[in-house]
Length: 528
Image (cartoon, rainbow, N blue to C red; front, side, top):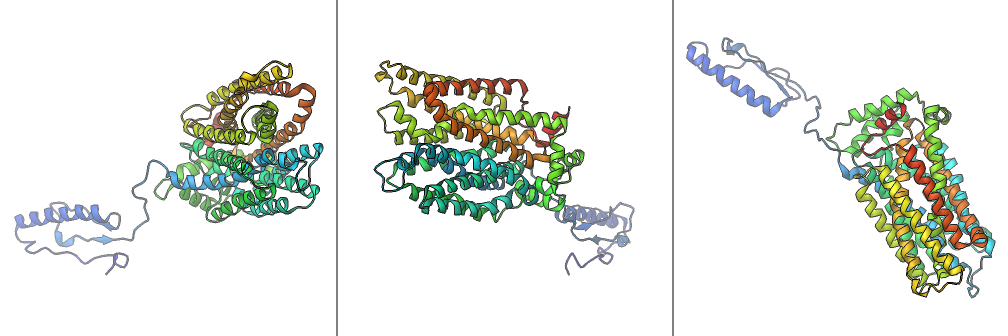
C-alpha cells in the first residue's frame, strides 16, 4: 500500500493496553516517541495527532496525506553555473563583433597592397571599408529595438546569426569592391542588431550579486575575438580566408547553445508570462533557490511603471521626465565615449605603428595590443564587483586621457623633425597602457547602460543607446583620416584626450553608483 493511496489507517492497538495504568502510560510514551520519529522522517507526508497521557491509545488515528511539493533545502545564494552558461552564450555572439571590428586593422594593408593579385581599395574606399560597419550597426540597432520587443533577446539572436554567417560568406567570396563594401555594411547591421540583445540578455539573467562579472564576460569574449583576428592577420592567410574562418567560428557555436536556453525572465514578465518568467528565473538561479522575492520585485516594478510591453508603450515610458533625463545622460556618454580613440586604435592598428616607425613588426604590435586588451578585460572582471562603478570609470578614463596625450606628443616630436630614435619604445608602451585601461573603463559604460535603464523600456532604450554608440564609431572612423591630414596624428589624439576629460567630468557629476544593487532597487532610487 503506497502513501498516495492511503488516506486513513485503522486504529492502532498496543499489546496489554487498557487494563493497567502503568502499561497505559508506557504505551503513550512509546506512541509519542514513534510519532516524533515519523514526523522527522516523513514530514510533510504524514499527519499525526498529538497524544496526551490521558488519551485512550485505541482512539488514536493516524492520517497520511499526499506530498504538497514544498521546497526543501532552500539555498541562500543563487547558483553561478547556469548564469555563467547563459552569459557566456551571449558573449559568444559578441565574438563576431570583435572580429568584424578588428579585421579592418589587419586586412587594410592587404587590400591596399599594389602587388596584390586581388582587387585593391582606393583611399576613399578604405574609409568606407572601415566606417560602414558603424553605419550598418547603427541601422541594425534601430531594427533590433523593434524586433526585441516582439521576440525577446534570445530569439532575436537566433534569427540574426544565420544572416551574419551569410554576410561573412559574401565578404569571403565577393568579386567586386561594391559587394565587399555591402558585406561590411551587412556585417555591421547584424552584429549591431545582436550586440544590444546579447548585453541585455546577460544583464537580465544575472543576479545582482555577480552581475558585473557575468556581464563582463561579454566584453572578454569580444576582446578574444579581436585577438583571434590579429593572430590570423599575422599568419600567411588572405583576407578572404580570414573572413571565412571568423564567420564560421562566430555564428555556428552560439546558435547551437542558444537553442537550449530560456528567454530572459524580465522579458517574459514584461510580456505578462509570469509562469514562464518564474521557470526562467529558476533555471538561472538553481532549482533550490527561492526566486519568488526577485520575481515579485520585477512584477512590482513593471506594475508601477504601467508597462504593457509594446513599442509604443516603451516610447511612452522613455519620454517620462524621470526616465528621459537618465536616457539623455547615457546617450551623451555613449556617443562622446567613442571619441576617446578606442576604435581608432582598433581599426588602424597596423597603419598607426607603420607611421610610428618603430623597430617592431606592426602585425606583432597588433597582437600585443590584442593580448593586452584581453588581460585588461580579465583584470576588469576581477575588480568590477569589488570596486564601485564610478571609481573604475573615472580612473580609467583619466589614464586614457594621459596616455593618449603622451602618444600624441611622440608624433608631435616626429612632425617637428626632432630626433626620437631613442623613443622607439614609447608608441607601443602608450598604446599598451591605453588599450589596457580602455578594456577596464569602456565595459563599465555598457554595464551602467543596462543597469540605469528601467525594465519598462530597457529593450528599446538599450538598442537606441547602442545605435548612438555605433554612430560615434562611424563618425570617429570616418573622420580620423581627415583629422590626420588636417591636424596630424598628434592633433587627433590630443583631441581624443580632451574628450576623455569631458567624459570623466560628466560621470563624476551625474552618474550614480549602482554596485551591489538590483535593477529594481536602482529604479526605486532613481525615482526619489
